[in-house]
Length: 235
Image 1 (spheres, one colour):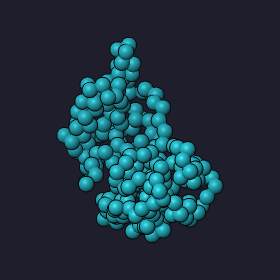
Image 2 (cartoon, one colour; image 1 turned 30 degrees about the vertical axis):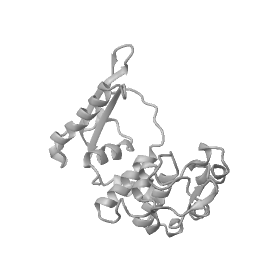
Image 3 (tube, one colour; image 1 turned 60 degrees about the vertical axis):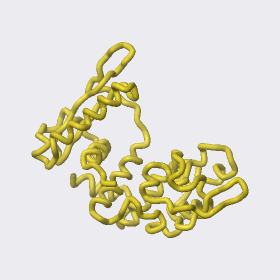
């Protein structure tokens, strides 16, 4: 599966502390992007809004320090008929997840990893995790991949998403893991536990992006924060 450059840039720039109105405006072609392909963003969002799947959105895309796309769509308050405005305030969370995924996709574009590579190729300690069953555990029918980590289908979860003994044995959350464990301790804890589901069979919001971040560190040869700073500051 090839990543879309447009999607990568959209997510990438969500992390930068910029005010879109303060950036110089440029045509997409001036910074190596396509106006025609970027229009697909609006088409996709309008279709979602028309289907009632989302009320509205604001999209700003910048590259090389120039604003190349800035549009609002749909409604700020659909019930009241108030259109979306570009300076709307949104409550968002977990932005490290898409940023970590973008980091992995950048490494993919550089041919340094593949999305269908097994997790164990980069983190051997996780290569042989079995899958929990009602009577114990069974071998995984296939190994979880980097794509599974990105889309929460690797068989992992957060410990705080259930009250079973296996949930209680899992790290409770990302913040808790970061505060109480080193990366090595975190991986060792996961490696000692079975997966909750057969890889690819079930979506469950999970520690998959935490694991993906450690893979990015392994491939990039640097801490994730340093990798982000070096890569994103160059785009």
